[in-house]
Image (cartoon, rainbow, N blue to C red; front, top):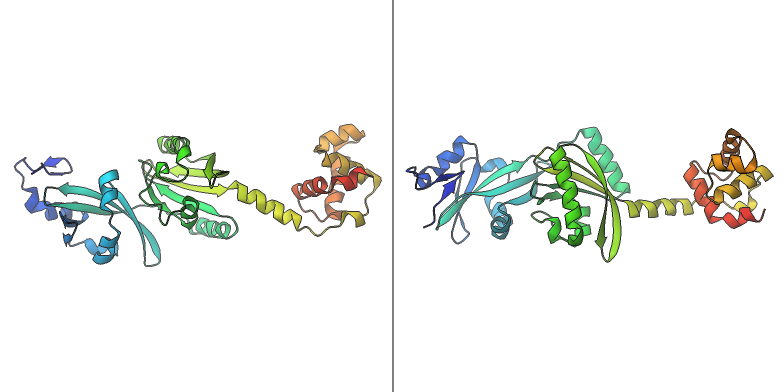
Length: 305
C-alpha cells in the first residue's frame, strides 16, 4: 500500500488519517467526497450540500483523467441564477480509495454597472471572457471562447490543448506577466483559427492566483465598422460642394491630415478644419472616420473635380 498523505501529513506518522479524514475536513471546513478504486462515490462530508449540486449530477461531471493529468479539475455550474466554478483536488489517497476536496473558486465579482456594460457590448461585439488558474488551466470560459476553440467546454484545458496551441507560448508569457505584476494590462494577441490569423485586444488582470481576461475580436470590429459605413445613405454625385470643399476632400482622400492640407493649400489649419466640418455635415458623417471612409471609397468623384 502506498503512503497516503493529507496536506503533507503521512499515514505512517502515527496519526490514523484513515479514521479521522472526515474530522480533518470538518475542522478546515473542506467539502469532500470519497471514491473507491472503481471510481464510485462512497460517502461525502456533512457539508457537501454547500456546493448546491446533487451528488449524482456532481459525479457525472467528475473527470478522473483531468485529476490525474493536471492534479485539479474545474466544474462550472449554475445555481440560484448564479454561475459557480468548483475547484477539485485529491486531498487523500491510498490503494483502495481517495478523498476529493471541493471548494468554490472565487471568480471575479464585478460591479453591477460594469456587468451591465459587458452585457450591452456582448450583444454587439463577441467578447471572450475567461478565467485561468496560475498553472494556465481554464477554470471558466463563456460561450464565445468555446466557439472559438471549437469545444463544448474549455474547462480543464490549457492553451497548449486548444486549436491555437502554436501561439500558447506567447499567450502564457502574457498571463505570467499579469499574474507576476498583480496589475491589469492589455495585449494585442494574434492566434490562428481555421487557418486564418485573428487579432484580439486582450485585457487581463489577476489577484495573484487566478487570471481574469476579456478578449475582443478586432477583426470583427473592423468588419462591422466597414459594414456600417457602407450603409451610409449618400450619393456624392448629387452633393453640392464648393471648390474649396472639393479641394480639401481631394487631399483628405489622399490620406492628408488637416495640418498637411493647410500647408498644401496655403490656408490656416482652422480654416481647413472648418471646411472638413462642412463636408461631414453635407455627407451625413458624424465622425471624421466615416468621412475618411467615404472619401476613400468615392475618391474618383473628388479627383475629377
